[in-house]
Image 1 (cartoon, rainbow, N blue to C red):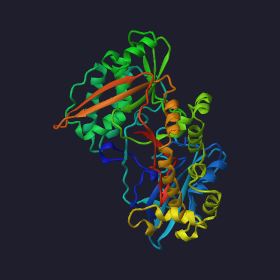
Image 2 (image 1 turned 90 degrees about the horizontal axis):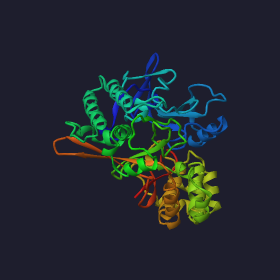
Image 3 (image 1 turned 180 degrees about the vertical axis):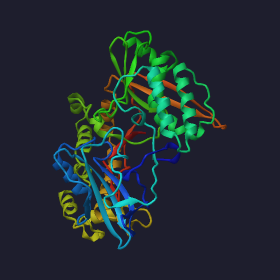
Image 4 (image 1 turned 120 degrees about the horizontal axis):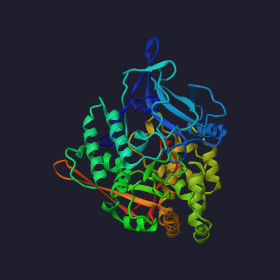
Length: 457
């Protein structure tokens, strides 16, 4: 997350950055330094595991073999997610993994769920944290709101969010952006340049629906076709809700018309950047017809979307002939704490791992593990082969375009004086073009942060 895309909010253990420290109660010389913060399930894998057993199995797989695990609380049948704070004890250099079990990852995020590490307190006593202003930061429920109600909640919520953080100017910028959306205008917003990415990448998810409900004729693209399809002349009396259900990965909001029908909305920005999307959302829209038409591509999607972040790449690599069953067994038998590539018992796995470049100094880092290095090597061999597969790309596009929802696009422009204009247009049905491609932003030689994602190139 870039600095210009974030704001400040109350912080807890899970909001800490590497290098920040905790001091033991009553012993100022006992210091823990944050190495990393992880959450299971990872992003794109849902808010909770199916069972306590699945969660514990995922935690066991995520921690290096022989790791020092310190539990902050006890498990019960309802705890199906876990937070992990990896720290270094400065007195002896020991790496510890402090874990806290929770029922699930709430839509509002995890930053307030774990205030202190047991027996330690944050050394700086800081009470502010950086978070993007997503709809879930401002809208805490699934209630339907009119354009005016949504506009008011966005304005008042932003003011509260930024108060006393040094970003008070964003409240002024957001208020003007909301006024423009309500009025259906694209007047320049003065001094908004520093928040350009915030407005375009996040605020567009609620500014777009406000504009569409208030003045649909000023929203370009296929908006007229949408009104024709839903047999309305305008969106008067409509209201908007933001789903909290993680099963709706590709849907950002729902606009309910006064007549009753609902329009599912997928928001995006007009540029090609942004985070990789989840394959699980694609797989959930897979139909038997698409699976039959593109069997090999559909199978790859299914494997990467439903198998674990370890088993998925290995199964696809096996299918593509990159590795064989002996290589998989070699990785399974590897001591998860190993830092010696020679511990891999097949020549192919050793060669794959050795050929996978890493950043300077990675091999000497305390969190370096051959297991993750090898897994990253396999994943990075899988990606180009899958991305070159015409059937995989065809299957992805067939699933993505098998929809009846609206794509609401935010297009922001910034001039050399820091003024920003915001425009919105629609595609209906949502049209996905280009070449779907797997993107590795989760596999590293020092750890693994979730399943592989994709982008449209």
